[in-house]
Length: 301
View (tube, rainbow, N blue to C red):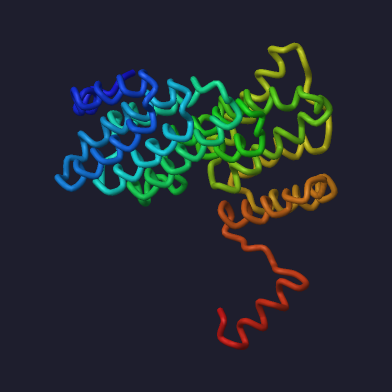
């Protein structure tokens, strides 16, 4: 969907520059875009500057000029910040248009890297604009970033963004797909990791949806979850957190301690879950406890 507010504000100026790019004079056009942007900002014409940079980014990217298109896309985010522009559907449309243009660049891997840089800047801007509302930035932008990283098989990066996308259904679909790529016997591991990470973020609702959707997809594919201790632990853990039953949580973690240690990150997630859902901070052990005691003696804490 095109932006109704920003589309066309730059008028004939944007059209002339677009023609210059199409005629092969991309470098001169880029310098002119930057000059016009500076003039518009001096006059506090932020809306017009946003449309100019939106148009320029798209034209340059569609013309396969990734470097110049990326530069304008970054300037677009800087303009949003400088103008203290409120985040709304019109701005999201602008971001989505530029994001889509990155996907038209033939140099796929390099384009996605630059696309992710653009989206990362947008996420940071959205976090600053929505301080207190989205701790990690707008979920819609995280979803775009996750989808971009999937294009270059960056499963770790995609997962990190899916965690903040508020789309556990799509996250589950992604995890199922990844688990079929040579990790057929580790479906329980992918499910457990996603559930634990969401719970560690204090997002019980999405953790439940992720769990149920993951199982639904597996069943519809005619497959079965491996009957493993980790799978059972994950299911029991969700029920325990839903019931707000700390004694059961403690018993569960003790019973499945070997299973939890299957992945070195799981104990950390469990400690965080204990703290955010039950108010019980984990006891620090070994070197960490010693360092904390020393800091306390010297007034470092």
